[in-house]
Length: 367
Image 1: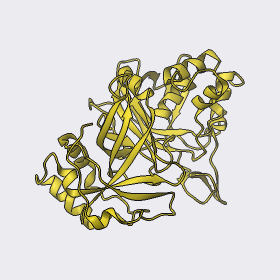
Image 2 (image 1 turned 90 degrees about the vertical axis):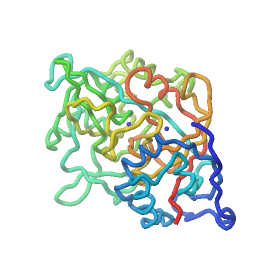
Image 3 (image 1 turned 135 degrees about the vertical axis):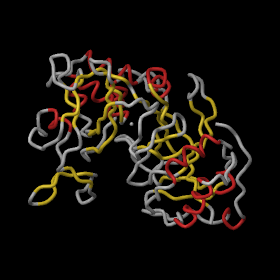
Image 4 (image 1 turned 30 degrees about the vertical axis):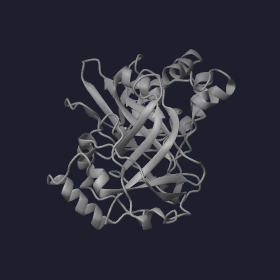
């Protein structure tokens, strides 16, 4: 639902001695010296997104005039592998509620499905309902249902599973085997659905109901079902199916504890190698990340510095420029990033092993 060491980015002495910037918004930005990896790939990924100006939102440090200038330079050949080191300054993201940042991984799974409901495929995947609106007017919620009398909380997962969307006008895009497959697609934020005729329907994130997200894997860890290291996505899905997905069964009860519910857009695959993120551009493995879009705008470049099991099961340095090009229901807060690993089971195995802390740096163009 992104690692090589490079020459240090030298910031001017005044900038290095400056205090943290724009405190009181849930995070601060601390000027930093970091070695940005000299990657032509990272620059190519950023080129896909930079022409779309990011909203300034809560980032007074982002000067759009400087953004336009450096984007034009990147688009017209005035760039080399050290582009980010030369033209961007790094700021460490310091969340108010944590000493560092937290990284996970995601991938695009392929699951079977049908465009029409059958006994084998009875679980609908919903498109974005027409009455769903993004809002901050209701405390603790990020979206709501628009009614004639105003806004009200959108139905949660359990209510939706019980039929709360039947009169909403929400389209049923495709039908899956069960709610475990639906949950897998929702957690990843996208999926490839293999249809009976061999075609592939790509699902991409289109919104969520605004209800709080609960990590059900953490609940199982707290119950002693498995250790954090053992609780992979395949193990979680297997547990859900083994404990029953019908209403009232233990697997279904656990799923309902996560009140958040994701809606999708769907289209038949035309042969593109990678899925599009919520930003509308194709994702690049180990360079595209999903972020909290209420905080960070799509297209912003970041630098991740962490030791992660990203190549195999052992921890290795992950020091890469990555680009915000996607979002996900579980990615909440300034110090959160979900690294896209690619397609299929191998990517899923690596993505599922990622639950690690490290440092997260925002890169802003120099004026």
